Length: 265
Image: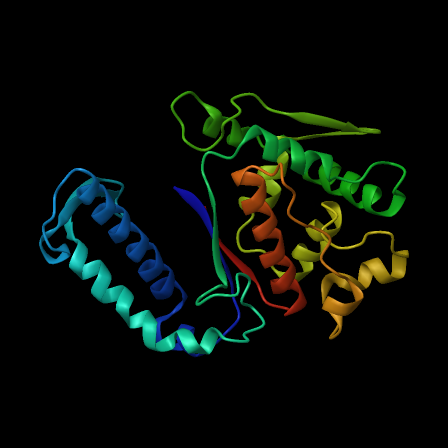
């Protein structure tokens, strides 16, 4: 299980297979390979064309449904990606420098270290403009994001940390539940909203004058030159932090290209 995200930059592969179609094929290929590896690990050497597995899902009516999926069907569908991969070379939305690099994921469970890392990136009162914007956003929302607490219940796969982390920032306190809702439960992230959260979390420089900061809702043509990406990998990053940094770069690219970042949580 994961948070899937996609830079909504239109291209020939998306025109031919659709955004959901590409994502379904990428995930299907990964699932097929994982099943093949599991069978091989257990000594089953049957050809992939003979391997199947049960997959459970909920119907649109909310009823559980189990069906048998054949690995060969997933691989045949994924093969439709191959002739389109060359279109990804040099694409400005290619976050990973590989075919279909405009797609990415943050795997569950999200580590407590990653939640703390996010909280620690928020502005403090010594950074008056971004801090005032954050305070207004928190106060205007008047929302403790209590619905996220249900995702922390015992047995749920979403968070490593069962409790709610919090950070006091002058007159306001921000919780890890509020951060999760701010990023992942507000629907697809449009450029104007992306600009705000990129500032909040220091993904782009935030020591800006008020008039410049307010103009960032639509990125300028030279956005990538004027506002460089501020995050870099560190040796002590865990898996979640590394994947969050990839997410932030995807959101940064989407903002710079003035397109949405699509989310599937």
